[in-house]
Amino acid sequence: MQELEPPERKTQQNCEAACLPGKASVSPASSLGGNHGTPGMPRRDFLKRAGLTLAGVTAASSLLPVRRAWAAGGNPVEITFASAKFYGKQTIAEVVEAYNGAQSKVHVTYKELPPPSSSTEVHQGLVQQLARRNGTPDVFTQDIIWVAEFAAAKWALPLDEYFGREVMKDYFPGIVQGCTWQGKLTALPWFVDSGMLYYRKDLLEGLGAKAPETWDELIDSSKKLMSAGKAKFGFLWQGKQAEVLVCDLVSFIGSNGGSILQPDGTTVTIADEPAIEAVQMMHDFIRKHQITPEDVLSWDEEPSRRPFTSGEAAFLRNWSYVWKVAQTPADSSVVDKVGVSPLPHFPSKQSAACLGGYQYGINASTRNREAAVDFVRWMSSPETQLRFATQLGLCPTRAAVFEQPQIAQEQPFMQPLKSVFIGAIPRPVTPKYPQVTLILQSEVSRALATGNVKAALQSAKEKIQNVVKA
View 1 (cartoon, helix red, strand yellow):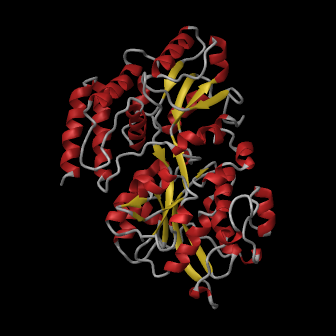
View 2 (view 1 turned 60 degrees about the horizontal axis):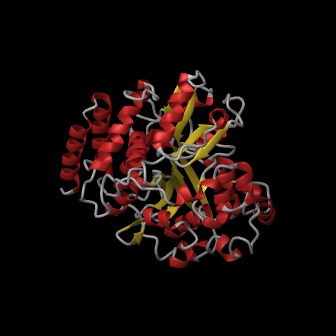
View 3 (view 1 turned 180 degrees about the vertical axis):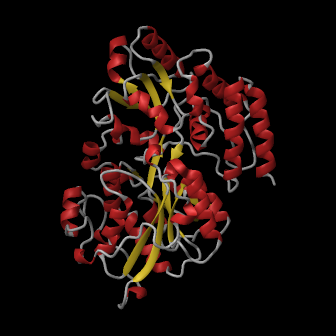
């Protein structure tokens, strides 16, 4: 998923407390005057530095927030924005400050939630807040897997009247699809992420090998490097009984042409042969081929990342945030030795990546609808997406922004993997996803621990059928 906050730094506060007044509030940036970009920088200068010329990306009118009747004068409209925490050269709070300083009609108070590595807590906090239907928070960010749930509960405001088809053509189609439920746009794209393969370029060059395209190639290179003493571990991934295990599962099953749940939302395919073969392979990485340590069964993103950036592993499946860490001397022993490629696949199949990323939602109960729309329009604009990409490592969802040269300079892995992000595979799309993912986490963990893959997946199928058909 992203330039995430490493779990060792994640906040311990619970989401309910994070949504209460007084938490992580952003004060008005009155000294910024009429700027519409970086704090202290005139809007046109920001555009020049960002490389977003008015002609090159979009018309000037689409960059400016829409001012409606509510902007006639008086004190600014007060709205709240709740978002998971992300780390980079800047913070979400600084971006919100830039919006507050860009105009004087709306003031946004930022409510900081735990990072995506604590997605369960973030989800619970948002559910508690939105279910009250009191309009707080006015705007929120949501994991793409929650869009269907929040829309089905009528907690998220339909956005079609504000963002028509012509506007949405600027975004990658898959993300727009992920922000749509039963034909209605209920979320606005923010950023996209997916799982990918990190590999040691120097070690593969020593073997005369290239980045593996198939799982057999990865297994072969891993064994050779481990037997030669070049790598302590072959392939690291995330096997902890948590959401990240489902993300890995989606990629591995997808790379064999399989799936967990069909698009109809009721046909369960987790116990079909492609899925069984993929989960068996996950087990065999540990037990049969011994290229993955058993400790991986308790690892999420950061525990799996550290051995790789310390130079102990040949391959790593992880999110895009790892690139920056791998290139930072203070955090990495493999600076300039790391390459990135799509995850491998089964013979005659195609690479698959689990779709991740957070998107914007507007509370259906907000009392400040127009102000909330204005804010998310600005947050999803080309110039703000470029800022998120270069400063926080969050991949843009607008195709034109993706091609900006600043992204190649700051985040060189992004553009070569554009096709991976566009073609990423979603996790099961269902309003019952919170129940479905817990079943998957439990049964797949059991399969990996015991090796009784077929029985565990059959159990998962039966339990998921009971949930989605209820």
